[in-house]
Image (cartoon, rainbow, N blue to C red):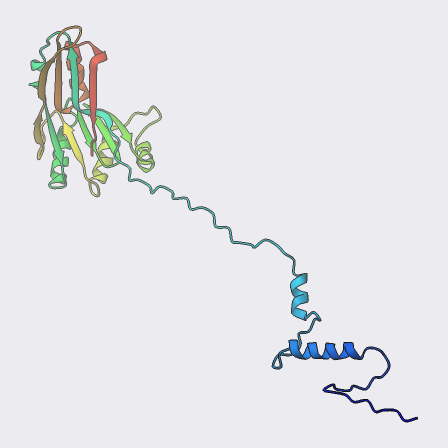
Length: 258
């Protein structure tokens, strides 16, 4: 019996191996060829060393350097000379009654030396009259001496000045006048002196006390105000208080003796 030869029209004959997977192989190979660009290799799914290291890296918060806040400390201010209650620049007295101070302030004069010129000559002449003057003051930048005849008191404005003062002070806190004058003599060679006295001395300037009087009104009636300006010693204030006894209305303004 003769078998007719099968004619294939436009179909490609693929030999079969009998496994039943021929069609799947065809579609699989065609899909792989169409989806993969010819110039690009097929992506690999196996993990790389870099990806493994990335997965094993612990996720910790990012560290930053701590910078403490800046604290601006104030710059030290230059200290000013401290006023000393050895002399007043102004005294104000207020009274409900009119008082006369003419006999006191008109007869009171202060002799003042301030400056570097002729300092040695001014100091030497003051040293000659200081023990006879009613009241005098000598000021250096850090020490102030008060002389009442032969009685001396002093005030130091710094710790180093206090050390110098302690060397001329005895156990009873008394200061020998000759030791005080010798200390000022040594300081005058390197420091500026300011000298005030009730007695005249060479190169001093005569400085009178000036009075300004005003009458002001109040609920209790008229008040009389007396303002004295100049270089006023505490002994002069004591004389004012013999005439005027209302201490509650006395205002004092000290002098910076430098």
